[in-house]
Image (cartoon, rainbow, N blue to C red):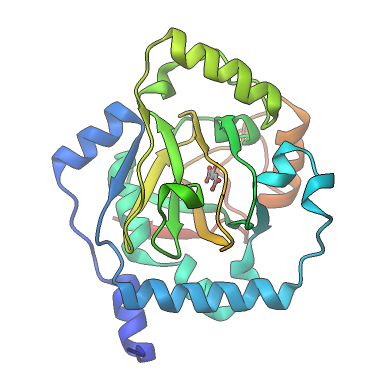
Length: 275
Ligand SMILES: O=C(O)CCC(=O)C(=O)O
């Protein structure tokens, strides 16, 4: 069924109610999966719009066998809200930003950046890592929404979480690599965290904290695993002095002009929801 532009706007912006139990679950476990946030028709629309934009951008790639482990994990296309009005409407969804705000228990959220993560047919696993290693931000009030653009069975490589591992400080200095996969896996096993590996239904999405350790399995199918993500931060987030070269690069890419110690309020970091 085709959706009219009014219906798309309504579906993207209508509030979705989450319970205190869900907020508590997220605060404890560092992630949450929520079913039926998006209708199947809306997911299909998002898939079409985002896929068309990725096709248009015509991302150059090299043979998968010639890439390193990070490169084999997915094609990573960032801030596509800036190149397409239709993608912008999706990424600026108040429905999603309100959930992010409530889960983090803050008064509002801003954009850090968006990214499409397309795991190619035969694409490799995504190594264990914590996202916030890459971000020069001063608090842990960050969250990523992971939106599969199709039903995502285990064979496509859905996102996996190590529940409650946002409390573990060891392993936080590792970038995504074979090393992060091996070292973090060992630490997580030693600490007895529960590993959550589940398929995603159509319309089901997840939210995960910046410091939780997560990974994804390989895509063993001949179909692209298409996922859109939006990274939110507390609207009052300030810039921290970068602790590694990746944080310097992120500062330049996602919040150029932001000043250390001040709220990250550049044209690339609009407030997406405010209570
Ligand atoms: O989609 C994936 O394979 C990994 C996603 C991820 O690490 C993230 O969204 O933070």
